[in-house]
Length: 447
Image (cartoon, rainbow, N blue to C red):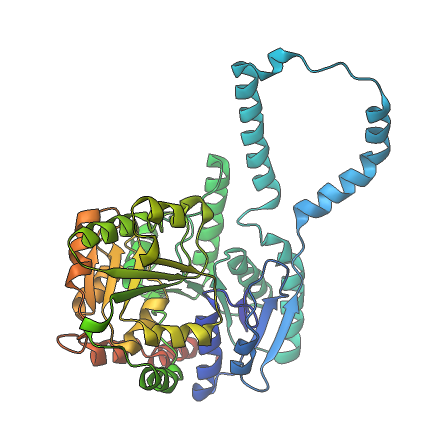
């Protein structure tokens, strides 16, 4: 049983790993039943992904209940009459002193405490916890009907690991956890709002990890981090299985590359594509500064951003202020197949993974199929190791404008020279990685 909060038609980043495992495990006689969440208004939908789900796969969906919203709605109904009566009463005008700094400080403190209390009540370990109860009940029904040999839970969201843990414990089945990202030691991104929540979540992670028959991490660096964090657990319990790429993509990428052949260098500027989202620490503004710096040196680089871009970056204005507005193109998210076609048209790729040595963006593995230079903005760690080991491009610190400009100027369209593309593709082939997962299932199951 695969427990995954997101599954087609949802198009979140983790879907491709889960879908690939679902398809290719059949080659090793491991059939899967999928326990997932029903898509909601917040879900990114790509209906074409449904075509990749193998025929006969049983996909069972469970609704996500927003516990906080349920409680709020009940409170609104309960207090609607008193609130209406209160509004009808005459109120005194607000005193000007309400805007005093001391009042604002008190208001800010109350707001912060309210957020912490809300998190403790409704969002531990995350705001997807509202599917846990019904998902466990559905999972136990699946166990009784289909008798799976292994429970495999993949995260984030990390409430999914709790669902898998509860099903495996109550059904007395081996549990395999798949960490696509760090949980309690996330170097950047969403964090819990209080020390109490952080301690609570750390205990939840520990409970799940100790109960698991095996724990999968998607980089070697993340595996070593878990080995170090859980010294009482035998190190062989922690296994690294990278994301990799779907072998089915090879023929599609080759077809796109044959259709779109880039022009020779003298005829157009170097076009750099970032295929994904820009948010939080994935700040593109230092790249814009580097492009502006190169423009003064007579070197033209065009940055194409396809995907969500945090409006707080004000990227278009930022580029205009630096006189490179025509060299920065911001485009909305597009379906996966359309992105694959777009990746064939450009000259090189941009990869942002700042401030963490443990994680690798999934797009890196698809970039391998195009054999085009990659500029990785990262710290020494998982991403830099792959780029340097296989000579796939160049790296720089995410906030080093001079270093980024030097790296950009060194990118070359002649990507086949020096790059160990074949070796990289062999190591990160999704079929090979799925067989490693099947070996693990064979080992921990009663099969």
